[in-house]
Length: 310
View (cartoon, rainbow, N blue to C red):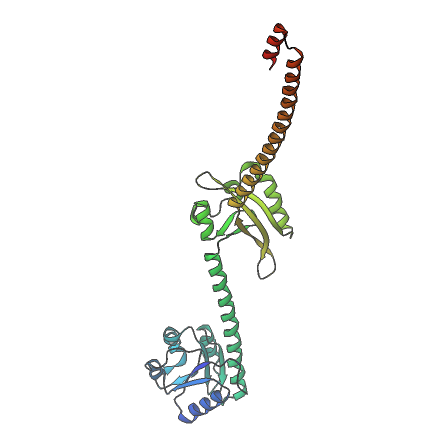
């Protein structure tokens, strides 16, 4: 049965029959196989560019397998190495394992034991690749996201932040690594409430949408919308707090301006209404003055006083 994830394997065996037998076993299981009669021949083969594993006889014409392990790892490494030997040698086994050998098999080789060993290697390599891919993806997000990514330890000290925060704050990580976040970046009148948010996060209370400002190197305040969550180690112990922040300074400023405009509009409407009512009252007064002027026709003193009122 072919493996789901074939390996690129180098077989180093000086006995031709044993070498070809190993090639057949591995190729039937779906692996890609290259063979060599000695370690020297293998190392001098320029056509072998990449390897996942080496199956090597311990006793070779040009030396013992453990003597060649550093050269093999330097040439293709680090690679997984399976050493096979015609007899059990405890000291040789211990030495080989110390040099990073993945497995140690006794001749005559049991095909299933060899294939099981390689399947374990394939599984481990796949898991490692997935982990490395996830780590690379996370690192890419960390370095390119237009959001603040901040890591604090449980005492609130700065462990790490991304390039975007450096641009926002004006500080590099080396400037403030190990400093207490609240003392360095949070305005004094906000510190107590934000420490409470941080304490709640440590009590496994995730927080989202908390807006509070940070102080930049140049004295300006930036309004940040924060979300906080816990980071745990492999033993599930809380060891850090992850804070992700979006810079909403422009949005907050726009909201303030919109509110101010709204208030000015209300004042303008009120003034217009007052002006309208004032005009109505003045018009009524003017009409009354004109009627009174008719009544005072011929009364010089009265008309003089009326003109003053008008």
